[in-house]
Length: 234
Ligand code: SAM
Image (cartoon, rainbow, N blue to C red; front, side, top):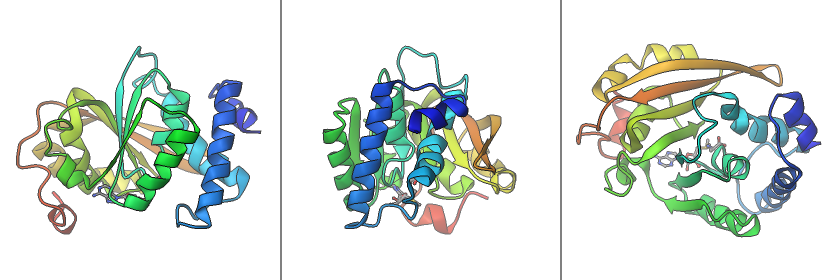
């Protein structure tokens, strides 16, 4: 069923990748009983709303057809989109970050069971990790889904992106409104929106905003934890 749904939606996957996604689903619903990982648990819903949604970036010319890329997922939660992309892009390296230790513990189980040796996991807040030299302006792509509204998310994410690399924000129907209030944040962080790609998924509109980092980020950003959210760069 997974391969069928992906193929119908224009994303080709191998049988091995289908098996890995299946195992991911089984471990996700098993652990969801013990820890709060996702409200979506019905098989088809998880395939569509978590797995396929996470994979939409594979339709984009910006992301595919590279020999290698380093990808960071901020606020990955139960691994969306990071784990799905790690399964589907074994030639890239993935770093997944979340501020909740329980989620990172769950992801260590997934990493071990699915043998995802190209995935690294870190517990921490984007506002703190973004100032560490080993993370700062280091990634070809930063991705993030359902973590914060765009102005806040830009300040979390852009400091991790290499010069000329991309931050890709997964957004739903409020996409345009969020873009409208992001001009100042984009200016302060020296970044620009290069494309907004629209997809339809289970009758819902999904958007991927591709934002290019134009230069090394000003050391003032991200501001301290709490301040970014309380006083976004509107
Ligand atoms: N990205 C996943 C998804 O699409 O299902 C999880 C979304 S969940 C609503 C938001 C996640 O972001 C949570 O796991 C939370 O712990 C994490 N988070 C929120 N603020 C964060 C921050 N400042 N730094 C790192 N992680 C953060």
